[in-house]
Amino acid sequence: MFARFLPFALLLTACSPQSAVLTSGEYWAFLSESTSFSINKGTVVPEDWGEEDYWQVDCREFETPAEKNALKLPDALKICNTWEDLDGDGRTEPDALWMGQGAWHVVHEELEPWRGEAIITAEGDLQIGFHHRLPGGSDFRFALLVDPNFAPHRCNAQTGESEPVDGDWVDNWTEDLRTLADGPIPPHFAVLEDQVDTGRLWYLNARSYQFNPDDLEGGDLWFLPEQYEAGYAAGQFSEEDFHSRAPRWGSLFMYDQLDLVDAYEGSIYVPQRSDLFFCQLEDMGGKLGECLYDGQGVGVDGECAYDGVLSSEVCTELSDCTNGAQGETATCDGYVAPIDCSSVDSCSPSIPGVITCDGYEAPVPDYDRFDACVVDEAVEVNDIADEIKSDYDDVRVTYRPMVHDNLWREADGTQAGFDGWIGLHYNYVAITGDIEVGSSVTGAFSLMMDGDESNSRFMVQGKFTVDKIKADRWMTDDLRAQKLEENGNSLCVFN
Image 1 (spheres, rainbow, N blue to C red):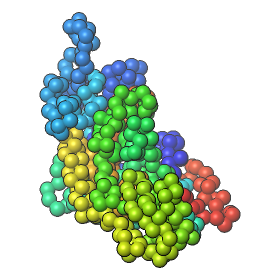
Image 2: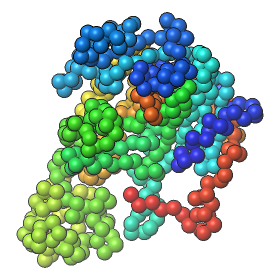
Image 3: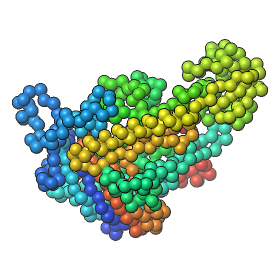
Image 4: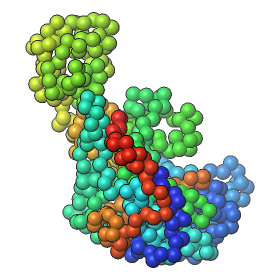
């Protein structure tokens, strides 16, 4: 997925009538004083935007007054050192941390693209892109891509068949859009106003990664598998390539430090458990550990513990957790449970998460406490998103990330996955209509993108209409799908 995304810029130069029209839109570009290729090569001159749409941010610290006089941007907004420690973490930088760590030429403009296109790619994804001419003549092009049929599946280890993961992700994401219809729509979400009643919401979550809660010091990162990627965005601003920022699943400072050094080992900050936007079901009452549960239940004799009677083979699994102390204790992930293995054949689960054996009942996870924890954590992440919005208000930018709490997912007690995790999503698109070749749709998007090889940042918002979605006729068909069909196979992915 998304492998055929980058050639899209070439497609837009074709002479056929354009199919996507941007009905309204605007962008803000934070061009880095030190690393912007566009400025350094002279293809972009910020003053060309005019005094109403160009301003400066410079929060750098200088060693001497002479250095400051020589290097500091002359007309920088007086916003540095005015941010408050709103979340009590002892840091007074903006929550948009990068903004306080450099000097920026900020330019803004209403979008009036000279070209727009919407196609269904050979892989079945909807790809929408636009070209806009910048002051001075350089090109600004960007495109976003979503999977219209996004519905993650995984392999059942017992049957080898593919089965849905959790439920309908897009339907549940869309509930975040519907909540905006309950009251006045804030200015930072105004771009979505035409979609709140009828649109479906996609979070552009490609390139996402989480921090393993059990290995924060060692730096184990969990990267989003391909089948969980719903969308992506990328483009080019004059000389600078950029890509959509991935969601954050923990403190922005933690992610910022990793991004600065581009390698976990070089980071000066060791993440803490409190940095994660995460609640763990195990912490809310306990469960038999990973020696009995693998995320789906206990796999014994080809059956799941939730579904059938446990066999004596469980004793072998227990011994792995107890160093052979069968019949006495089972210790797994810090949880100790007395188990009589001699009569384990008679044990069966009474309800999911509970195993009763010879009068012993494992503690039931407290789902109410877990849900309350997630709600409270989501409130805190929403506060962070509000602080980010306030930071951008300071530089005249109307933007805010969206927050999704994943409460609709069934909690399985494992750390991997998304149940218990709160996501801060920087990129999202809402679409009304059937997404297929020949159909018409309307939509809206809000994008936050980072430079590939520069420190520049780009924010783009807009509304669009597509009279007729085209089929991609410039790229070859999806070879993977062809080979699967030729061999009579279906793709079944193990997570």
